[in-house]
Length: 261
Ligand code: NAP
Image 1 (cartoon, rainbow, N blue to C red):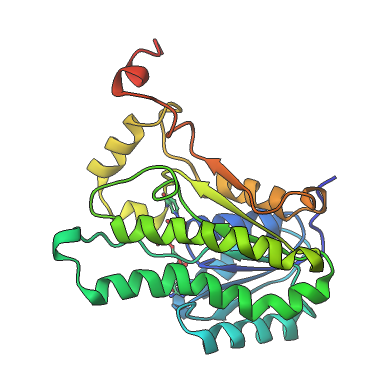
Image 2 (image 1 turned 45 degrees about the vertical axis):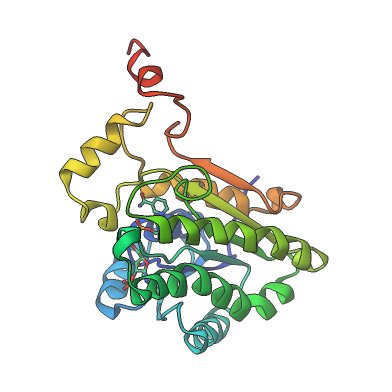
């Protein structure tokens, strides 16, 4: 069951954090994995880490998901390298904060260009190859923030992550005749380079809000994505899978503090 051996997988934002965790799970399972990001230095370093985890090949592809042409070039490079695309993990995303009152048009555009348009562009660019696969899989990295929860300073981010789910539900219907599924993972707080930049106080505060008592690891998301990308998940489409150590569950701070643990 759940063999991903030999599958051709693209992970946008695969040079760091959650994307690198997703890539590691697929690479370990014997898939051919293309990680895409903007920084060539980070791509090289991640490829060096990932290559050799499994029997497949790992390559780095320079791409900016906020640019349609760049996504088209990314898909062409992967098809040339691996002969096709079976799985697209549309994971690249940014989360700089900006209070609503002072948020500039540039800040809003940057967020929506990367997180929302980047999802559209990367899926559109890979579509012909996913159709040719005959069992294409698209797995989006959304978030609990927006679809389920809110956090001051991240209205634009929450809107972008909720927008991905609106995209997903109609794309899932449109693409089902091609046997392509479109699903999303909703991570809670996962310890990545991006989250580490927010500082120790933020991380400690977040850990206290999670019943599991600690932030998740990129591989926690990777395993969920791998399931949604498997042949066995072929009848699941347009769905979300929250991976958050129970972070969204407590009704109140008391619900969390009275666990007795
Ligand atoms: P991260 O550590 O900052 O890594 C982000 C990755 O995305 C990097 O590889 C980055 O590489 C790439 N990227 C950013 N902008 C890009 C662009 N325009 N084109 C191509 N690649 C781009 O972030 P993360 O924490 O792993 O987050 C990854 C995803 O998970 C995001 O969609 C985020 O919203 C979501 N998420 C994260 C958490 C969390 O707790 N970490 C929780 C919920 C959801 P370059 O900068 O070199 O391009």
